[in-house]
Length: 186
Image 1: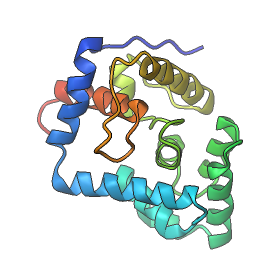
Image 2: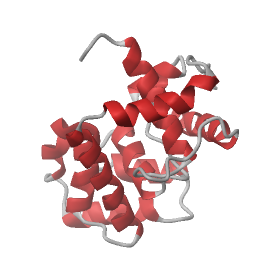
Image 3: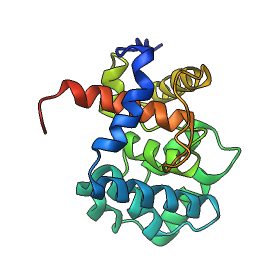
């Protein structure tokens, strides 16, 4: 079983979530907004390459070119599974990582924009903020459960004016920002 230890102080999380958005460049903000709009499209049944590409571009532009190797049928099938309200985390992740160019981190981003109240992005910065760095489906399930428990404690509030207006996504921003604040200027 994975062990998570929150590195930043709980009291700093809301400020870090706000700082994340303030320090994000205009391009980063636009990519995130577009990703959540694409997630809404997928949630509403538009299982297109364009929506998947928009999300992947937000998280890792360098892998976008791999997506075209997937057939429209495979993309549609994987997104339909991921968007199913009753699918297990494991089945949703496996459907997505079956696509060329999609790893566990990208799969978690796709799930997070489709259902921001249910999923968080498995990102190396968020993991660093939790004192961990392992990536597999079981780990993602444990990570997600831990993040949900934190979000449910109301230590960070939903950012209703931003994409993915949930406490879970605000927590994700806070964890990411905490890790970024430790790194020298990128």
